[in-house]
Amino acid sequence: MLKFFNTLSRELEEFVPLDDNKVRVYICGPTVWNFAHIGNFRTFIFGDLLHRYLLYKGFDVTYVMNLTDVDDRIISESARRGIGIGEMTAPYVVAFDEDMSALNCMAPDVEPRATEHIAEMTDIISKLLERGMAYESEGSIYFRISAFPDYGKLSKISFEGNIEGGSERIDTDKYEKEDARDFALWKLVSDENATGWDAPFGRGRPGWHIECSAMSMKYLGETFDIHAGGVDLQFPHHENEIAQSEGATGRPFAKYWLHGEFLKIENEKMAKSLGNDFTFRDIRDRGFSPLAIRYLLLSVPYRKQLNFTFEGLNGAASAVERLHQFRRLVTASQVSEDKGTGIEKTAANALAEFEAALDDDLNTSQALAAIHNLVREVNSRMSDGALSEEERQDVLEALKKFDSVLGIFGEEQQEILDEEIEALIAAREEARLNRDFAKADDIRDRLADVGIILEDTKDGVRWKRK
Image (cartoon, rainbow, N blue to C red; front, side, top):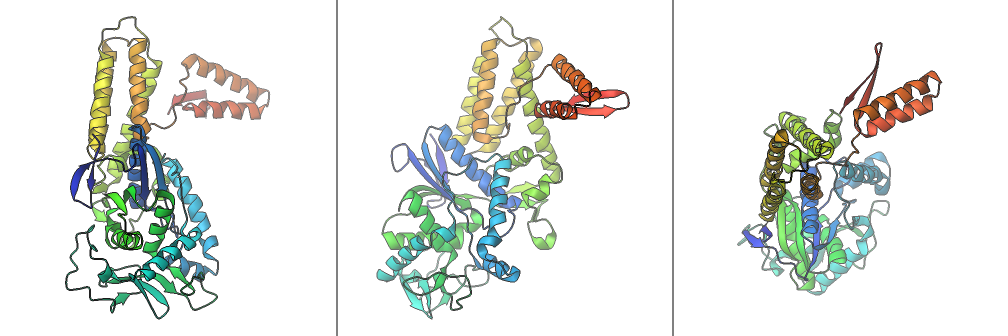
């Protein structure tokens, strides 16, 4: 039985899709004004885990992750550079997709951009105006919180005594230093040269919150199964999404709300002032593999804070290498005719423990423990004798299933025997003597692709496995 902690109810609930076996999921993606930092990627890898495990469970999943390509920072930065917002955001969109791919995240089924859904946003705002749940003031449109009695049901923040009609409002997308009262749906843009769009209620640009309501409902319907994101978005962003979406449709917005916790760096909150707001690229450029970074970000369940340390990242790199070595060892192991080691049952039990852990609100630490327990048990059995072919296939199939969810093994590399390596090295040396350097380089690349590193020394060619 798959269970999630639903922020809306503050309870661990059995997951029951709204529509038979179909599951519709929306996660708030990045604001593409810069490279995404490692805290962002903790959330996105949590989303990828959720996506993968729902597929693993046999659900028909539609997974949507948006790109916010218009907001105050983007407009300000593009104006400073003297370029349009499309030109400003384009390289960061490419970089984000590259980084997600490097971290072995599956591509979402839909990756909508805010600027391509202005019509859907203005339609929702028009409905809210018609229903009296929004109003115009000095050219901008605001949501009237007092018209939505359930406001605060997600964040559980009490606004009693603070919400008095629509007289007080905030013309910003951020509430760090201001009261959370009426919020902007549409912001007046009076300068014809500034970023803006024409709408029935005047030229302007959307508030941040309306963007996600428009994109999620377009691709998933007015009511869908799961809305996910970082815990920092719970208020005001997700609270406002609920208010404007349910205010416009009169229907529940999302059934389950899942929120990933914060990430700290060396026990400190990430901040530019501390110099620890590392991007994924910063950390990769220090020599760490994307799979080691992914492993560390998965090592702590999504609802617990994670303390990202470079010591921990070194440990994650070692753990990933041990898992890769184990898979190579099992793949290349000798086969015995003896079928009495009991590995089939061991592999089946490990899979059962793995699934039980993830069924319990995606408990990744317990899921990883199930994998490492299997590795220890199989290594112990193999030290006493070879596996049968059936046992070897059982273990490899279990690893394949583990990796279909966690994505920490990466591409399987075809194992290459020592004598094959020596033969290829000899062919490379012959090609170099014949000055066929293209062939020599091709052989080096082929060996690198299967994890063999060549070192040309004064004593000849040496090789080692990665």
